Image 1 (cartoon, rainbow, N blue to C red):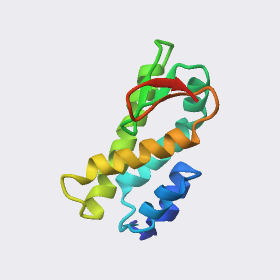
Image 2 (tube, helix red, strand yellow):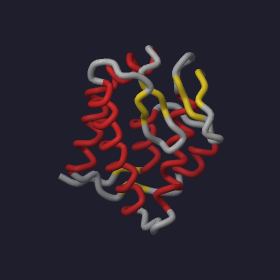
Image 3 (cartoon, one colour):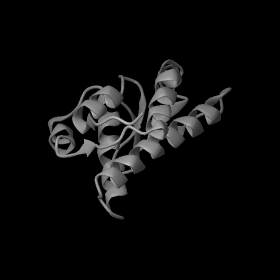
Image 4 (cartoon, rainbow, N blue to C red):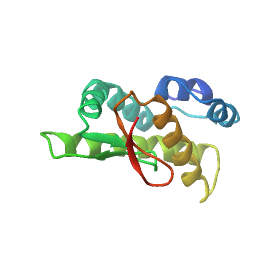
Length: 138
């Protein structure tokens, strides 16, 4: 089943809190079709959310400056969680680019915005990568 979902609601559901610049950017676009592939990606992210947050708080996973998670350690299951999360994020990012006809330059813009959102919503002590490339604990 395909449904039209306003993009801002989609982002709020997906990412939580926002900076004003991200909200302004997000309000301009719609997810035109919530395809089965997008729904599967959202469901996958929701299913692993608790484990991902736990691994972040342990310093095993961080949010990089490209809008993806990155392994910071070699604990059990870290690689699998990172790979699954990044696959789902890639599906979502590409759908946003495609459905809004951003063209070839749109993907980096979308990942940059999502990287900012993830840095902003990271919990204190979570590893985050700044736009400069430097890794810090929030």
